[in-house]
Amino acid sequence: MIAAFLRSDVGKAMIGFVLLALFFWLLESLWPEDRKQCKIRKGAITDTLYYFLLIPATKLISTIVLAIGIFFTLRFIPIHSVPLVAAQPGWAQGFEILLLGDLIGYWTHRAFHTWSVIWPIHAVHHSSEQLDWLSSVRVHPLDTIISRFCQTMPLFLLGFSGKALAPYALFLAIYPILLHANLAWTYGPFKYVIASPAYHRWHHAAEENALFKNYSGLFPFVDMIFGTAYFPTRKPVAYGLYQDHLSNNIFTQLLYPFRHKKQAPVAAPAQIATPAVQAPFAAHPFATAPQWPQPIAPQPWPDTNNAPTVRG
Image 1 (tube, rainbow, N blue to C red):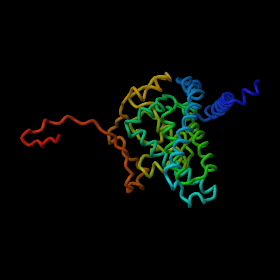
Image 2 (image 1 turned 45 degrees about the vertical axis):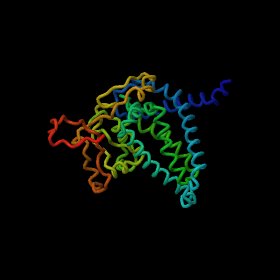
Image 3 (image 1 turned 90 degrees about the vertical axis):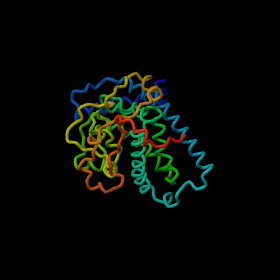
Image 4 (image 1 turned 180 degrees about the horizontal axis):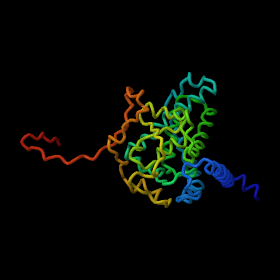
């Protein structure tokens, strides 16, 4: 009976949870970013519920959505692959999938932060005020479904093989766990090439200077090209939603996108200027920090004698 339980999906999830907990307990004990943070932090129970309840359900829904997308693609789009892409060896496809996937993921992630319609969905992920490996699973189901669909479908349409896409899907599930861990790792001179836990933690910082930064989940040079990389030498002061707070109640979080039609945080333009490290990319047309809609200052009432005609 025990062996059968361990072979079940629930049993595998429990084994994976225990192994991950032990592995990151060791890493976060040896190289902690925040030495004062408790192992069982505030919100850990909520994130555990995400791990055991929402991840399996979201995985099933994501698979169904992708299957529907693939069906309609094969049904209505006569050409759904690029022969040159499909003819490449597996290692070349794997490398290109990582690069293109991170580029697509960058713009998908940036859209979540810059489009107020979907920002409340992604805000759930940013509600963690203490980060560790388990906080990586606090993702609203709609966030996962939209992100996975946007990242996977273009690669499928280009003709990348399923054998090359499968490891990429596994990578998308594993590497974010490391990025959110309570680790002080910066990767030293490779910090501009591979995203580190220290790099991604600044994306979660509840500081004005850190808003709209470090979207890339793998290659920081993508952020550098588009003017959103941030490499400060100090540690963040606080994490979570900027000038906001979201309850750790899982039901409140799941309903948050539907109850809060709220714009993303607003920062003063001077505070989100492109850091000096990005100077070599300043000439690129996209190498500017994203500008959020700023509050419109009250203007004097216009002179009615010179007012333009209002069109109905």
